[in-house]
Structure formats: C-alpha cells, structure tokens
Image (cartoon, rainbow, N blue to C red; front, side, top):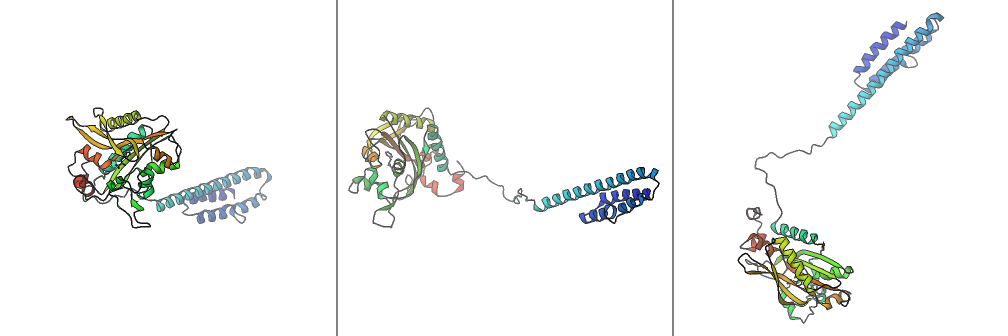
Length: 335
Ligand code: PHE
C-alpha cells in the first residue's frame, strides 16, 4: 500500500517536472494530495495496519507527500518564470534598428554662426556673466525710447528699422539691435547685473557680401557700483584674447550712441598690424538707468554689442556673408 503510493508519488514528480502549464500542475496535485486523492486514501488506510508498522508507514507517506508538494511548487515557479520570459520577449522593443546603408551616413553639425554664438556664451559665462534673451518683435519703447532715442532723434533713421503692421504706425517692429534686452533685464532685476544677450536682429538692408537683413548680435551689460570705462576696456580686451587668441589686441575709438555716454567703437588687431572694427560700446547713459528705475547716482554700468555673423566671417575668412544663409551643405560642412 505504501509502496504503491510511493511509486505514484515518484511518477508524479516526473510528470510535474515535465508539466507544460499550471492546469496540469493543479491536476496532479488534486490527484495525489487533495481530499479524494491517493494520499487521502492511503492515510485512511494507515488505520488498518498493525500498530507496530504504523509509525514507519506514516513517516514514508509524509515524506512522499512532501516530495510531491516540493515538485509542484518547483513546477509553478518554473512555469511562472517561463511566462515572464515569454512576456518580456513579446514586449521587447528593439531600439537598435539601422537603416539599410545604401549611402554612407554623414554626421550633421552646428551652423558656423551657432558655433560662434556658443563659444561667445562660453567665454562670457567663464567671466561670470549669465545669458539673457528677449523677443525679436519689439515696441518702440524697448527698441528706441527707453534707450534714450526719442522719436525726433536722428539716430532712429540710422537703424533702418523693419516695422510690423500691427497697432499704431511705427510702434511695433523687428528689433534693430539686441540693446532692448538691456532694458528688459534691468526692468526685471536689481543690480548688480552681468548678462550677455545673443539673438537675431533685423534691418531693412539689401543682402550683399557684407550685409544681411536678418543677422545676429550679442549684447553685453554690466551694472554695479563704481563701474568705470577701465572695466569696459579690460572686459573687451579679456574677451577678445579668450575668443581670438592671446596675441590679438583690442582698442577703443570715440564714437556716439544715444544709450551710452561716453561711447566708443572697438577694434581688434590683425596679424598685418591693421585694425578691424568689431562693435559698439560705452558707459550706460544715466537716462537709460533712470528709465529702468535704477538710480545713476548709486549704480553705473557699461554695455557693448557686436555682430556674431561678422565675427564668424572674420574668423573663417569668408568672402561673402550670404553663404551663411544659402543652406549649401557643401559650404557649411567645412566648419
Ligand atoms: N546697439 C548698437 C548697435 O547695434 C551697439 C551697441 C551696444 C553700442 C551697446 C553701445 C552699447 O549698433
């Protein structure tokens, strides 16, 4: 009787090891261990045995039962793991797909003007400046008036402004320079201020070898206590050396802008000893500080601005600035 059960249990272990699904496992459990199972029957029949044989038979019966239970648990674990593997395989995303490579793949690159802009930002960030931005469509207040250029001012006409047909005539325009960002920054925050603002600017110029109607400038603004023209000159010198190389020098020449006083133009030295004009700069005009609610008795500042496209033209010795907007990848891929 016990042998018969042990044999059945040994067969059940083999069947469990081979069971293909959970239904089969449950069936075998029912057959061997359940209420109307072989095991239940064998246990009932223990009572028929001689009392001397009963303990030994009970131990063997329990041992066989424990092996079947362990085999059933192992089968369930094995089936659950297989099920997980199936699900993972079914839900797997292959992210390594490659296009059939008929044409050799070429890596793209940043536009040379974007590269110049990124490097300029890096140089100024290295000097403790943060990067600011402003809108490309501006009001007369930000583009002119707050910058000390009232509507009667002759400097207005020098900006060749492109107006937008919106609201009052000549009130909405594409910004003619990045200087409006000075105003937006000073309006929104208390000094000290050290920012650079790169961005697109627009003037109604006909495109030629040295002009584009849409071009890029970078503006710098520092407002703090006891700022002097010496700080401005030192900053420009430091930036020019960091950007062009230690051997390149800079100089300031007196000039005029309504929003700076005194004003200057700054040049950089060329290997042949000549000078090349880069941009404008000066000490922030007291009226501009006042327009932003900053007391010029307590705070002073300097500002500068120059064209990024022209900088890239100089650096790469490009003959025609229009190449930057022709989108010819044979040209652009050189940089
Ligand atoms: N905004 C001036 C221009 O576009 C450049 C400039 C900026 C001059 C800041 C002085 C100070 O020509």
